Image (cartoon, rainbow, N blue to C red; front, side, top):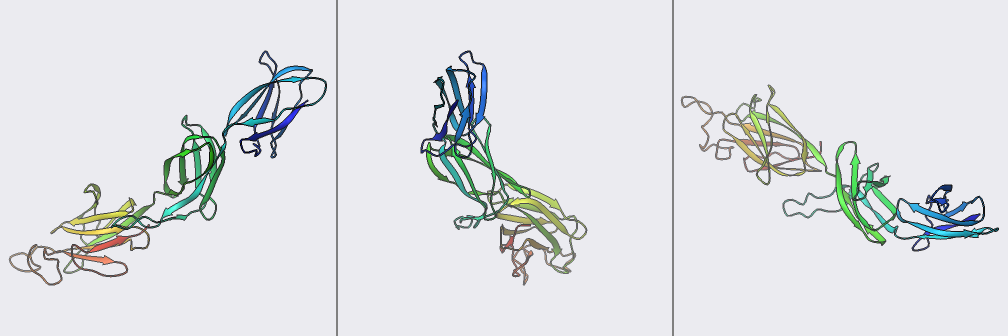
Length: 305
């Protein structure tokens, strides 16, 4: 009988390590798995020299020639690598990092599935975050990995992590949170909904995120919008533009008021005329949420939908 213990560099056991007993012709004669303490046993058919192969998904494999006589032989196996651990918090990043504000710590979220794959695309380990958003991978070999975090209601995130041969790597994962932004376009004078107006959302970099045509009730909706600072415009009469910030802790609805042009000198003023309560361009912007504001340059805010 061949018995022993499978450990890694620091002497810690490697549970689940696979041990295969082969003869010198390469034929398999036996197989065993190390228990929680790293202990194993293999039983060769007779005395002689055998090949013992030890492998683990988190360590480099090792092969040894073992000569067996008429009594049990102890053969301990030390696997290289696998001394690294990876852990941290997965959740929503506090603070958007916009408007000069620095992004803060990650607010943990539970039941997020985290998958670790190596450079060949092989899944090395899978775990779930606990109620506080904490996760941990142990017994990892040195190398570069892809860490993926996924949950049912948010877009998945994939990040590259580099692990040393030994030691712990702390790595927080910020989920790619998205928000649904809803709004209404109304006429500034009567406050009636404006149907078939065009609402356009523009990113801080100037790229158009999307456009929506309002319904009969003047409503529009943008689904799956990343947090950040945007400019939202509405056109149908004179265009209206207002800067908004989308993120946690802010209202998720915006109201844009359009001023219709006058006809034959009657009704509301033409765009560009001076009018009390307008922004100087005949445009009225109204934010629905924690406060009301007027003016095309005023900022509104959206929150997670």
